[in-house]
Amino acid sequence: MYKTIELKKEGRLARLTLNRPESMNAMDDVMMKELGDVFEALKSDKTVQVVVVNGAGRVFSAGGDVKKMADPNNPLDIGKVMNDVSRIAKGLYSLPQITIAVVHGAAAGLGYSLALGCDYIVAEENSKLAMNFIGIGLVPDGGGHFFLKERVGIPQAKQLIWSGKVMNGNEALEKGLIDEVVSDGQAEAFGDVLITRLLASPIASMIATKNILHKQKLEELESILAMESEAQVDMRKTEDHLEGIQAFVGKRKPVFKGK
Image 1 (spheres, rainbow, N blue to C red):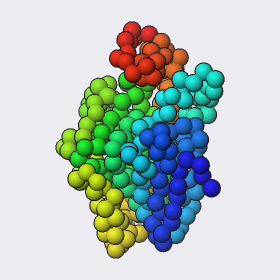
Image 2 (tube, rainbow, N blue to C red):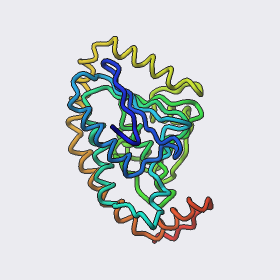
Image 3 (cartoon, helix red, strand yellow):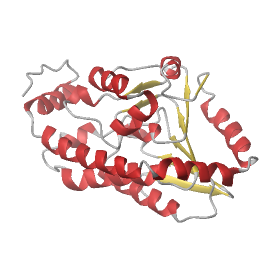
């Protein structure tokens, strides 16, 4: 049914796997559309109460597919892409299920926004978590501004966005950016323990609380998504973004000029 993700249902549980392991689960336009589609489908699925998001292969997700951004022969339709990115964030935040991000390896950029949008985040000690859009001259998208400031407040959110700081699991836990840190190789096993605990709880009550807390914030999220989309379209036209992309592909340090 999907080309870049897998969805498996096990009774009241749905496992959603980002499935481009050869590209470190970097999100291309196809994956972005499919993630938007799957969250919208899950929103009307009354049989599922827990959704787990993980990544196939060595990492959770390296973020947006930078190589595709740099492909002159197949340019991305940035307007369409940003629409799907916004669908992902709004769909995830609106889900009537408890969501768990199980992170191993890297969760960077849009991949980190996706993890931050979940109700629980479990990460391994040596995971690399970063809101690192700044490295290619872009702003966070996928609700990154909203999810970060909900977790840590506006002052710290700004510092994390502006620095693009890469954190391991323990550093992220200390800052309140994740909920559990586990030994390397143990994220999936701990996720299963958490799933069992949730499914043995009065989870309908938990979902009702989530709805109460999220519904009042939905209009704010939508506003931020609109601003992120507008800013991202503008940033894509800057010299700094072009330099950031070329430096990334060339594996060198970028030289930014503020233009």
